[in-house]
Length: 311
Image (spheres, one colour):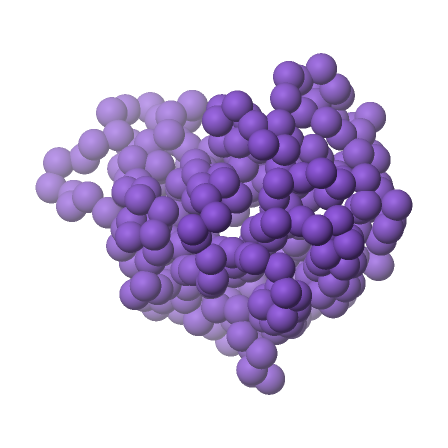
């Protein structure tokens, strides 16, 4: 089957493309600048369409004849003309219109755990919720996947955390570090997307996450175990980080976290309705296993530490 994919050159999208190709399906990618991704040119099973979500002709070419459309494009920080509203909402609207026009049989959409229209939610979560509503009311058979923090080698968030634990004798922790995340392996997410695209019996909205919720401290524990190090942790008051994050909106190099990202971190990202096992028949991998893979190039000692419980 031919599957049309947006966001296929990104971190999560790349894993999804790999999962589809492993299943011997053809994949057609929407790529803004194909010349920056030369490795795609001669890869078997891949077609490339030059264009963006603003290009109706490119979108028509992308979805024409596809058995499913997988929409993964998203941003975590607004830059220039790339706003949450433009990318998450208007981009989804444009792609849905093209998919309807082509009679696409399935639309698979990537949202985020915590997406909601509440006024108190971040613009990221509000626009993700608005895009979900567009998909739900599109008239197309659809699947919406709402992942927690996606973990794997090459992920920028994980890379930042690993480098912090590797290189700094003191690791800052925002507040009490008891806010919870439910990290899910990138390969598990990719398998869920591929299953959703190829199985017409699956429909609706689903939370997808790792097997257990972990505090920020437990995530750091797993990374330290994988690296074979122990670091002193220092609590940084939330008010101080919030001030620095606000300054970072004006001076981007001052701080690596935005106010919205801080809010989402403190809110946590967990679910009691993880669809990976029941709906997608995927046993989610434990974070300590994923952490060992992420840290393998840097680990100085064996990753298991006596007396530390698995997470």
